[in-house]
Structures are given as C-alpha cells and as structure tokens.
Amino acid sequence: MNSPMGGTAEKRVDVRILAATNADLQTKISEGGFREDLYFRLAAFTVSVPPLRERPADIPLLVNHFLKMFATEMAIETPVLTDEAISALIDYTFPGNIRELKNIIERALIESGGSEIQSKHLHFLTARILANSATVEDKSSLEIPLNLQQAEVFLIKRVLMQVNGNISETARLLGIIKPSTESSHKREWSLNRWRKTASPARREYSNSQSSSQR
Image 1 (cartoon, rainbow, N blue to C red):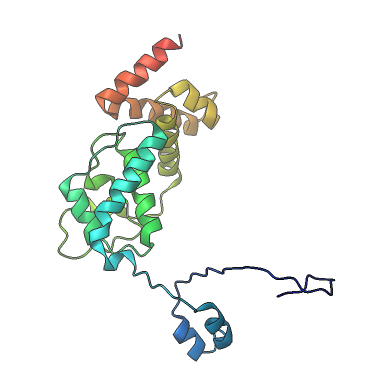
Image 2 (tube, rainbow, N blue to C red):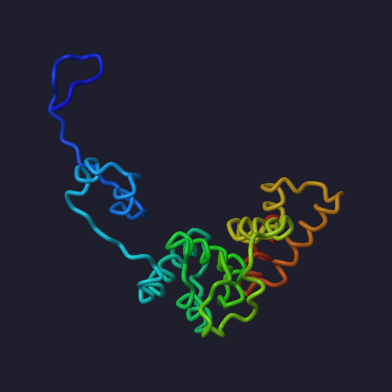
C-alpha cells in the first residue's frame, strides 16, 4: 500500500524491483558504504553472475552472437575468426566484461572489411594478455586511446559498411564535401583505401552500387 504525493487515500500497487551492482555489497555494508536495511529489502532473491574472465567457455558463443548481430545490421555475410583470434580473445581478461567484448567484435568486423577476422583486427582496452598467449601478431597495435586520425578512419569505415561502400553517400553523411584541407584529403584517401583493401565481394558489390547510380 502507498499514498500518492499530496493524497490521503492509500492505493494497492504490485511492484517488482530488479537491482544490479558490480560492487561487493557485504563489504560495502561492513564499511558503512551501503545501508544494511536497504540490502535486506532488495536481496529477497539474489543471482550472482561471474565476470566473463571466469567463464572463458562462453566467449566463442558470445563472439558468434555479436558477429551475427553486427553483420545483420551492416547487411553483410557473417565472417569467421581465425583460430589465433579466438585464442587471443579467450586469453584476454576483459576488465570491461561483456560490453568490452561487444565493442571489440564490432570494431574487428569494421576493420576487417567484412572478410576473415584475424588477431590483428582485435583492439583490446588493455594490453594485459596472458603471458602464454603468443597469438597476437602485433601487441603494440592493441594499445589505446586512438589518435584523431585513427578515430576518423574508424568512423569512415563504419559508415562505408552501412552504406554498402558508397563513397559519395559516405562523404555526404560525414560532411566531407570539399577536400581542400589536409584533414579532408586524409579522409578522402581513407575512403578510397578502404575500397582497395576490402574483400573482393565487397568491392564488386560497391562498384555495382556506384555504377547503378550513374
């Protein structure tokens, strides 16, 4: 039962509260950082979900899920990962948990141009890969943050895939109209470079799209 603000009559409500946290609430309670009475109001039924690093067997399943999801979103065929790439993912500790894995797969799909995803396409948020993992081809490439030019190339690739490799449409969406500045020249170069390095199937489809618009 509760009383609406400003009212006097009580009304019956049916409410279920779901709460989630990544903190150790028992420790927080002992340190005075969380109210004990509130904890017992919320903790009628608790479910503990271990972090991704403690369940590596789930990683290939999640990778396949995210690959299919992003490939469908980008209207391309679902690519495959090399054994080395899968091993690198399993060896990684994922401090950002499943959300980090999702971001890694999305970026890898974009950088691979829709072709086979290799370990060089995996950009981890940290370079803390287990010492016995010798599967990453270039660990220096896994470090972030990105500089501005890399961020621009990343964005250009993503838009290109969403518009099926149409350079004119990509330039329009990104506001790349007159390549009169050095930055614009770099963007224009990135657009054409992507088409040269994309998979043959993607290039053929992109070229057919461009021809049909003439």
